[in-house]
Structures are given as C-alpha cells and as structure tokens.
Image 1 (cartoon, rainbow, N blue to C red):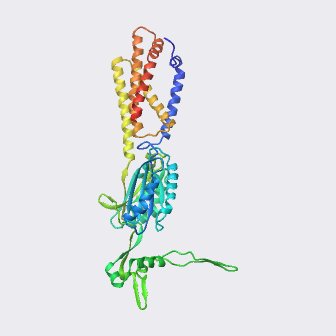
Image 2: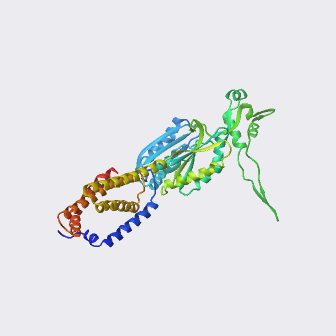
Image 3: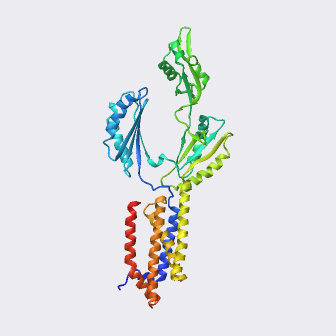
Length: 452
C-alpha cells in the first residue's frame, strides 16, 4: 500500500506531540477570548420612522402621513416586510430588513425615500424621525426591577435616571441601560369641561397661555469698560402653585386662573403603560450587551455592581433581578461539559471491555480533548461565538471523534493479532482507514451544516 501523509506522524512521534501541543495552546487562548452569547450574532435590523402630527386623529394620520411614507419606503432594497401604526397625533412605520442586509445602506436609502415625499406631508406635521436598531436589542440580556411600597413610579424613575443608570451604563460591555415602565416627572393639568364651559374658556386658550408664560429664555450679558455681567431671568414655572396662579383670561376685573378650571398636580408624563414585578408596581432597567462583548462576563459584572447598589439604595426601594438570560447559557455550558465527561467515561469502559488494554484506552482519551480544543480555535478563526448552536455542534462532533478513534484503534489491533509488528500495524491500519474516515467526517459535516 502506498505511503500516506499520516506516516510522518507515526514515524516521528515528537513532531506529533509538538503539533498536538500547538493545537491545545491555540484552543486554550481561543476559549478565553471567545464571546459567550445565547444565540449566534447576525445582522437582523429594523428601521423605524416616527412622525408626529399634533391634533390629528388616527384616520388623518393614516391618510396624510402613514400611507404616503409607506408607498415611498416600499421601493427601497432589502426590505422583508413593513408594519405601521397610526395613532392619535403619531405615525409609526417599522421596516424589517432582510437577514444580514447592510443596515447602513438601508438607512441611507430609506432616508432618501422619505425626503422625496417630505414636501407632500402636511406642513403642521413634524419632520419624520428615522432610527435603526438591531432586532437583538429588542430583548435585554437581563432585567433589573426596582420596587417600593412608599415611593411613586416617577420618584423611583427620577432616582434611577440620576444615580443608578449612569453607574450601570459605565460597566464595560454594556451597550444601554434602558428604563422600562418609568415615569418622568411632569406637571399634569386636568381640565374640568364643566367649569371651562361656564367661564367661556377653550382648551386652545390654556395651551396658548402655557406656551407664552412657561418657556426658557437666554437673556445674554451686558458689558462695561471693566466688568461683564451675565443676565439671567426666570421665565418658566416650577411648582404646582405657580401653575395654579397662571392667568388664562384677564378682561377688566375678571381674571380666570388655571386653578379655577383645572386640577394641577406633579405626576408622570405618561400613564399608558405599567410594569409590575411579583404583583407590585415596579420600574425595570433592561441591560443590553454590546454585540462583541461576553454576555456572561458583562452580566456577572452587573450583578456585582447591583450588590453594591443595594447597600446604597434609599429606604423603601428594593432591587432584584427579574430576568437573567446568562443562567440558561451557563446551564447549557454545564450540560455540554457533563455530556463530554460522561462520553469519555463510557468510551473508556467500552474500549477496555472489548479490547482489554489500558494502552488502547488512552488513544481516544487523548484524541477527544485535543480535537475539541482545536475546534474551539477554528471557531475563533471563523468568527463564531460560544452559543447554543455551537455547543450543540460540539456535542455532535464528540460522536464523530469517538467513532473515528475507535475504528482506527480496532483496525490496528486487528493487524497486531495477525502477527504484525506495532509500527507496521499502526502504519497499515491508518493507511487503510484515512480515506474512509475523512469521507465519513465530510459527509456528516455536509448533513449537519444546513441544519445549523
């Protein structure tokens, strides 16, 4: 039989050992640098077009805003589907892009399409706001909940925005600390239609009075020969009492103030949504991880920072982790390691029972770890990450390595029993099976690759 390229590794064991050590070293450094994620990274983006049309009902928004924009955007390349929502005073169009389509290119083309029909929109409508984001960012890697029995949601939100959110955002690998269910402080003026009708006041008058009496103004500065003075003036309203005293109508001896036609309170800017944790109203912070960051390490750092934050929270606020995706990832990795350990033990027992030699048992025990560690290096080389799919591939590849090792060892054992010398049986046994082993492996890869 003609010599094969495998002969060099049998005749020169030192070379084989050195190559194996290089594979192990390359694999170990890859293990420490690979990104750990729940799912593989892919380019799955969406573009959102938001247009505000104050005062228009849903039908007007759909006819004058949503429909023209949809028709213009639909001709852009790389669109999978378009979904739109027309509400009171607002149009939202969501453009889902095709998988792995260049989001930067799509954003530029969609922006150009929107600009083409900008002049056809009502002049009262605001300029459409276009944003692009990855579909992966829709769900955070972890959600932190903040609950209080004595504080309102807007008070919790104010503390989170000022103190907690900057600390969490500064953690290495964190893309965004998104506040969910929060309510920003806002002055709420609840108009009384009966009292307004009795006094002859219209909502437009209230809005005009607020716009003309509650604004920020930059006065500037005045200069002399030797001194410069910065001028400041208070042109905005800051308390409930100041809003209540604001005059809506002033004719002769008749003065109508906001407190005469409305109830004023310091509340939240939005009451349309509410978040609860364990039955209690809460404010969540969603922790989004950078695409190239290690999710497990980042969330572990978030947990450490949260433990420090808990000791500094004001009295009455409780912090917990409502959801953590890394628990599932760590359990998956543990199951893979457990499966590999069980595989090695079973292979050792089976080979020893059928062949009866400890030396024969050592062959698959050595080849399996080296092969798997080398596979990790190839994962790094091709830009893969450690995720559920790649872990599944590792489990499947164990069977391939075990099968190849067993049939090669068994073939060499057969030649030894026929009376051949060890070196000759090793050379001949590997030559006979090197082709079938490679062919079998390629067939299995071709079968499982489309599934992955």
